[in-house]
Length: 288
Image 1 (cartoon, one colour):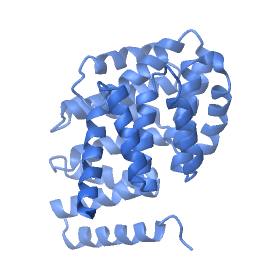
Image 2 (image 1 turned 120 degrees about the horizontal axis):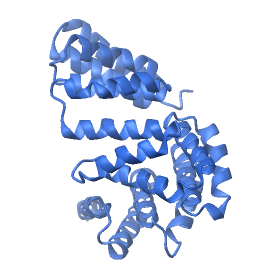
Image 3 (image 1 turned 90 degrees about the vertical axis):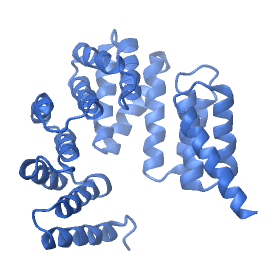
């Protein structure tokens, strides 16, 4: 029995490949190859296959509307298999690439910072992250700010920060077993304060991704119930999303998201929480 949906994804890829072959050297073909690459990357977790599609588009058709995203995702594939030098070289050349946007540039800088973080070059990562957070209108700013806080609060404990960065890279690669081992060690050490809380949050994410929903929600509840925690609103939002999209418990989702808005009205998750609440209320109206 195929419980992962892999067969269905492969069938969709086959369809996209047939479309590409039927429409050679066209935007239709580029879009089909791009979508197939996304499935390989995000659904089948095969960056070594996905990168072939992305590099074909960005190299052969640099002025395609899919070329820029293909270039960025090609770089991300290299990051995932640990080819940091090749990824850095790509990012250095982004400024020369046609149609490069400030948002894509910020995304590239963020992953350049993460590469340096994973390599233990915390001061260099800090410097790059500061550049990103100075431009709060880009989508990478919030993630950059979170990583900046982690580095600045823990830079005097480089050994544990290095352990966390290693776990973070395993998590990025979806090597959850290796990540979980390190994260459990960090989360058990309450003297680490921020790092232990971040480790517990990442452990909750792993449980949710791998299908252990009850344990994942329980870990999020532990974190969000703490009187003072920089993760309270993030945990509350993720819980609300899980209840809405996965558990399909609209009452719990509505309650959790409503509590988030009441307690943290200025949260970066406030706008998305309102959108989800509106969706829930619209669905409730349709049932009447």
